[in-house]
Image 1 (spheres, helix red, strand yellow):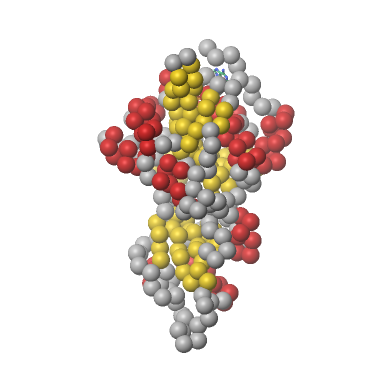
Image 2: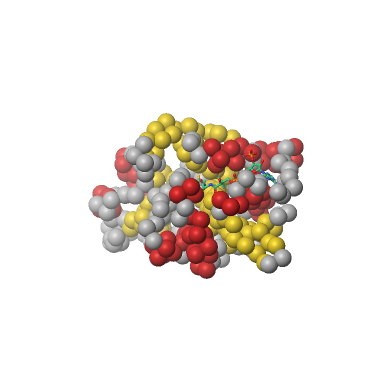
Length: 299
Ligand SMILES: CC(C)(COP(=O)(O)OP(=O)(O)OC[C@H]1O[C@@H](n2cnc3c(N)ncnc32)[C@H](O)[C@@H]1OP(=O)(O)O)[C@@H](O)C(=O)NCCC(=O)NCCS
């Protein structure tokens, strides 16, 4: 998609324009770029679109936002690139490649570390199993296809590897998702909503399920989100039929917020219900101080 001059700007009288980015839900078609006045559209991996445009003043900015409203798409975030980029990357990387987990975390039994290209093979070993991928977004046809998506910077940046250790060393037993995103906000306070929410996801090798490892890892990621990343809210979603997944959300203190009926099409051809869970920073503190699940003796 190509960038064209900012809409409605008379070069004779234009003041220097600020560059803004708006993130909206869904993937917008190319032709909306012209209708919106000549923006750069970037389709993001998380099924959102980022529009980059220049506006000389608030009136022009509001004009663009009005057009976006008329499109009927959900506005997820707005920021001025001259102030602060979305997702608050602090290491000079682009938002999509900024890692939410930068250093290794340890729990009683587990090590949680950032993923590398080399983890593709070990995660494919269990992700290719039908029992594991039944509820996952997609099933790559081959290891090569899986690997090329696993090593994409935005995917690697949000993947956390779960390991156990024994006398023979560390063994990879799962890969979780930790993605920091902007909360929805009104324009005037958009900066405060930047990077204010995190989303979690999880996949364990089935030879290591039923031992409480997922609970232990999620509790540590919640601690990391609230204490280190200082997010306001953590969310997770799954199919209603994926009982083990939403029971895990409830065990770690997340609240069911949504139950959408026949919302999502499963590859079986059935329209299935989905549930959304969340926990706020103050709820997590209360849950953590009163009812933290205990880690039983390993079998
Ligand atoms: C979802 C998933 C990560 C859950 O893993 P899990 O191992 O079942 O999760 P848990 O950590 O909650 O452990 C489950 C059980 O181990 C038990 N357990 C056994 N030993 C334990 C120990 N030492 N400490 C704590 N719990 C222990 C727990 O009691 C728990 O049982 P309960 O649910 O009856 O309370 C796993 O099923 C998975 O990878 N599924 C496939 C991928 C998938 O669907 N991902 C989600 C997509 S939305």
